[in-house]
Length: 476
Ligand code: NAD
Image (tube, rainbow, N blue to C red; front, side, top):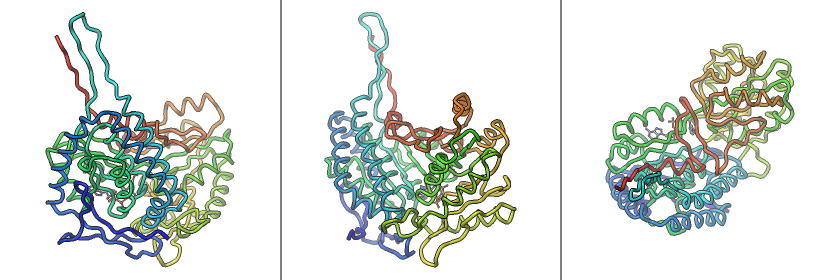
């Protein structure tokens, strides 16, 4: 039986807690009850972390690629060894089924191993110059990074936030979500146990606005990396502008899925239902707005309703559960507001649309169809287990609907017409497009959005470069 661990911050390698610090209750989403008390940083804790991060950068920027690579590969091995414990803790504090938490560990293992290789490939270039002269263009680590990770991927988000700066030779102060702290601490501990100098990566928690203002206002920090909502992202981007920080912003989405009448509808349904209810829909790349061609609309909608009804909702630690509770009390409230509002405006509720039980944050897998475009849910990211399915006549209209919103993170399309596949790849405004597939993330592929979904990439070689700056050196 895994016990939920005691909670602390990690500053200069020390476990920091207690004293007069305020605390935040970590809640088990299955019961709604507190399972841990998390210490929150005071200004003095943040100042100390900043001082240590400055020192960490001086150490790590000089570390040979082989050393950075060995730390990342070592941490990947430790995560694999600790997979079960890490996964159980993530499920306890976030609620997702254990199988999904295990996959999150594997996502970090893959990413850290990929970055371990990338450390050796941070090449610059030499320009063509006359004999006796030399001009080189080199990549250098940007400096200490302030990284903010949300609660929806309690292991995967901290892995991304820590892995890239460490590969690049930066130091990093991580503020993961106060709702899922133990998972983030578990990932950081693997890096420290793999030999990462204690000054290079630290973890603080706090009142989010206090921490972000303090860190982003410091001359020590050179880069902001944030994953979360567009509204908070815009606020942090403004703070970052005052200090001219580099930024990587992974923000909200409203994933369109175009299903054409020439598609394999059964295959599309299998992928879409699985994708929709994964992590209770609390995924930035979740398939959300189903834009379905008229001729296959009814088949698709009815198949989706069947798929929703097949979900086994329950405690993520129990065998057989396919969908856990939502992660916090805010989410079922948002579902009630958004789904209730749409139904009031005439949307048809195919299934779900209600909480389950009177304990914890469970919400039924839901399907809405024929939703008026003016309903809030058609423009606000629902971040929950609801599919929005509307019929459309033809390709132009469907592309226009896909591009209607200011978001552009992930988009999906199902069609067997090869020419149409190419048109869609070109015309859909999104950072990631899945064609006849919902698998759009991989360690070697850039992950990120356009428009209000943010800018910059995580993962892939681009994720490491995003933590680096260019320098040209001209020798006469
Ligand atoms: P929220 O917008 O308050 O918070 C989103 C994240 O930002 C949380 O992790 C939070 O700790 C952090 N945050 C909030 N204010 C901050 C600040 N001033 N400085 C630093 N960090 C701050 O809302 P929420 O209820 O946690 O989530 C609601 C919405 O956020 C969702 O509906 C979804 O749209 C979005 N979200 C997106 C992602 C993603 O993967 N892109 C992840 C989580 C939440």
